[in-house]
Image (cartoon, rainbow, N blue to C red; front, side, top):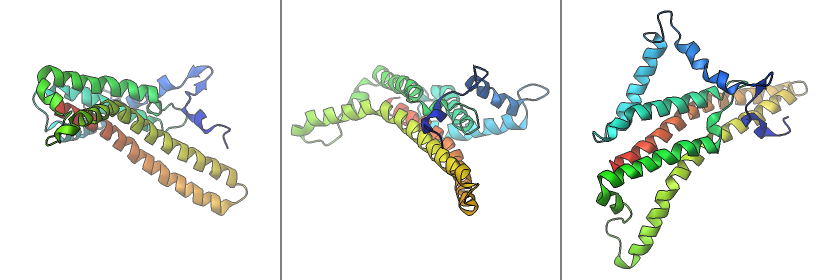
Amino acid sequence: MNMNMFEQFMSPEIILTPTAPLSILIPLLLIHHKSGLLGNRMTIATIQLLKMFMLNMTGQLTQKGQKWSPLLAGLILMILLSNLLGLLPYTFTATSQLSMNMALALPLWLATIVTGLKDKLSLTLAHLLPEGSPTPLIPFMVMIETVSLLMRPIALGVRLTANITAGHLLMTMVSSATINLINTHIPISLLTLTLLSLLTLLELAVAGIQAYVFVLLITLYLQENS
């Protein structure tokens, strides 16, 4: 078993060369085509997937909000590919790092707030006071809603980090148990191997769901302020 399970979140190296940049180039192998990078089945499937996501998420946005569609499409692809590539051996899961997730969440959340303050100042400030609040509780409600608003980017970054990290730690523990038991308790090792296979399928689903949830929440914040 690994002395430190968190070593898996360090960028591995081969001959003093980090493998993380190399893993980023793997998607190019999936979309390579003799006539170029466009027109093959993988590219068409990616475009159809993006269309489905964008129609689902940006359908309720205003015309100004829909201008964010290219940014949101690129964001969901980047997070999804990072999550999926992190399941491959000798790769680095960038979305398991809180610093990267906060670097994505904070500017995007702040951009939605600035958009609201610029275009709909009164409506944006009205979100700080729920309708029908008792007069004596108005200062407290404003404070609570302000804290809730400021916690949004933290929740975005921590949610993605926690889900990716927890899944990888579970896979590390189960795979280590499988390797240690394979020479002594074969039936138990087969059981843990089955559990590892199920965890891998679960992590594939989590990789897609977390990318979708991250972008969906950014879209909801934008919908409030656009």
